[in-house]
Image (cartoon, rainbow, N blue to C red; front, side, top):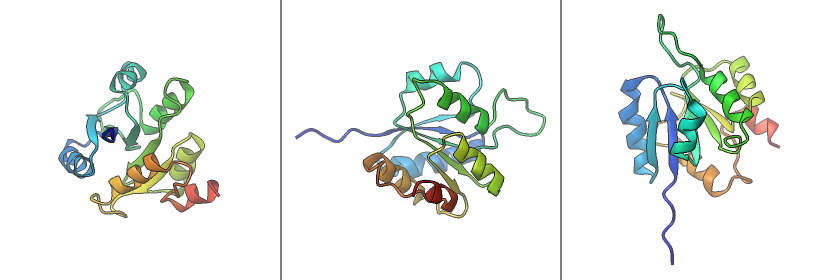
Length: 150
């Protein structure tokens, strides 16, 4: 009997103080964790080298007075437009919740939109695992995403 493959997650999160929390939560659920602070540069090449099974991404990347090439929406669009990355599921994980942002993420092809602190970080990896194990049966956490997938 072969061992189950450890899922690899790429977490795109610019707030370095969140990195240990995210890494601990996902590692505890059996993920191999790779963290990137942004989607700048030759991002698609980086994603192809990492070969993630799933991506977690913040929408609001960058700080005031820090000029990044791309925000989360730009990255999501880039991933969806490239045939080599379009099938990688992308979960938006953010503390910034506004219905127009949720709608835009849905339109750009995100898999789900999970608001923090609406969900305890320790439970969030369960949604990712559930999706990876049963993508066709997955029920999105966000009501707007759930309504779009019924």
